[in-house]
Length: 396
Image (cartoon, rainbow, N blue to C red; front, side, top):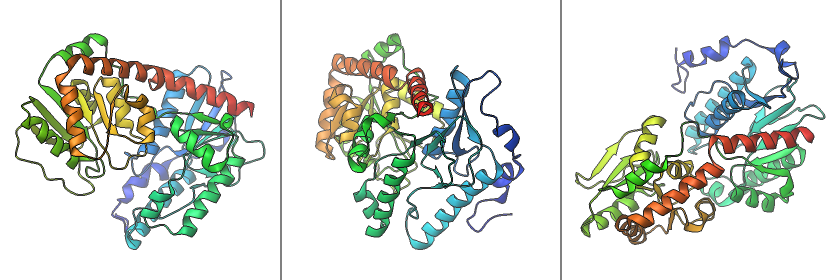
């Protein structure tokens, strides 16, 4: 049986069969006394590739498997799983009917009362009836008014979003953002004390830093391998990159361009060039293999809110080429561990030539990038940040 949206009803079977564990959930700690947290995200979601949902899954797994100080569980109650998926499907259908990419909601309200845990990690969603004294770490981000307006939201809808976030920021025990730049913007936008805000980067379970021996061997060998990964190819600047790559080839540089894209936002014309390879969507481990082989990762996006893939490139020792915008500028340390470019094929081509013709420059940038990944984005570094944030949340 299939729903009107085209989603098969069988997808909901895991949620329907999920047992309600209220008795177990009322316990405030695990048997060994480790504080127990609930992540207000469903254990099962109809969009299994959704970046935000995957972050909560990976975070819960990381804390439960690697932390000796905390556990973090996804919500497995049938009512929560069912409501979360119903809400997404309703927004999807209304979005199609009204011609928007997503129907506006100021934030997703958590369905039902909170069970008894020591603390709660709330990514985007926020409980509507949190008990007094509940310790809640709310993870969100600043509101880009221009982006919302371009998506068709009215002034009134944008205002609702701003007011809702401002209210939640006052109620939550602590706040979390995915980057230092997001933290700065959020604190300015909503007049929040920066001391209440933690930075929790995305958990990257499949990403490991390349060792220096492999890194060195890669960057002294040729030809130059350039990689592009992005589902929305036009927004991610693939057309700009292709033009720049043709300019690079015209200068006699021996190089290849591998493109991994579903071209979700429209096709990008590719020249008939054996040096250009187009691949469909690939599993994470295959993406990591391509990253580890690439000298340069180029994604000169026209619009990019964060860019997890740049961090993956740093880990793999592939020098990133990214848009010269505040978020990426801070991530790539003002161009010290990656190249920042304007949305211009000429500018991109110039950086490609510079990186392609100077092995030592490319290797040193890549080496600094691996060091930055290990320090700020590795599983050990992110785990420590989560533990510190939960510590502060429990202290209130």
